[in-house]
Length: 241
Image (cartoon, rainbow, N blue to C red; front, side, top):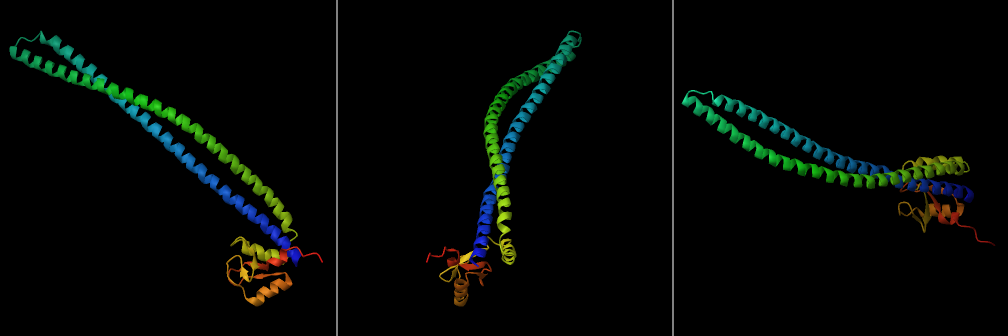
């Protein structure tokens, strides 16, 4: 019985190692997703700044065109001014020309301020692009590191899976079926009983059951947590006589 128990204990040791590796490896995809989200957010922020610059450039182009159009209009009106024979018509056209020139001056002032805003926006984009480039390099390096760790973990799990098959092949078939059923729900699936207490759920097992485990050096099922239980003495090396 002791040999059967040792074989199952060895199998569980491999399973616990696999579970530990998988738990650690499960962190990598989440961390990668977080870094990708951060990179995406930074990229979106840059794009928003670029769009703002493009919007200001469109405003500037429109304003410049309006100024040109108004100047052309003033030139035409000024050319017509000399043709006016009526004092009333001359005064009215002169007033329109004056209003147009003031409007042009206002637009010219707006153009100056808009040009300053555009220059500042372009500088802001350059700064953010430089920051993004640096951060992108940092995140890319971290992501590459995580992918490498993930690949290593997958390789280790694969290697242990091969080892598990070998170890499982020497486990008693009946005991193995029971173990596999429990393992799907909880791990460890097999635990020792120390001083009458199950080490899986910390509940006392019936005294008679504990005595049977100590005498037979076999296994049973914990009445409380339904794990496979055994007396820890069963895995101890017998003292030399």
